[in-house]
Amino acid sequence: MKRAIYPGTFDPFTYGHLDIVQRAVSLFDEVIVTIALNSAKAPLFNTDERMEMLRESLSSFASVRIDSFRGLLVNYAKKEKANVIIRGLRMISDFEFEFQMALMNRKLEEEITTVFLMPDEKYTYLSSSIVREIAQLGGDCSPFVPPHIEKKLKQKYLH
Image (cartoon, rainbow, N blue to C red):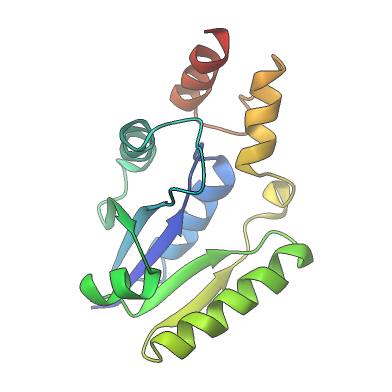
């Protein structure tokens, strides 16, 4: 079985993330979409909220599992018996960081391969931080996130 992990903060999950998941499920038997927990970051949504947003966004994909982890990604991948890490590349500026991380992960665990997937070009400008800023300033997030996430963004910034 080809099992892949798609890690991220997903704060919030966007249509760009969804596009990467759709591409991944066509390539792998199982895709674990997992929230990387990092105590150095202060996300807008807590882990439970992000898990629920992922569950609702990805419920139509039978081969997708939702999870979260703390620690080294390669250790989590080994625990889950996954041999592929999926990373999305939107633009060339993403490449340097992602390339460095892929090489370090390979150094730590050579059996795990990083696969870079590019989203549809209409999502190359899209990031969770931009979506949060648009929502915070009262803009329309509907082109960027599923409706249930847009609703949660509005609730966060109205309070």
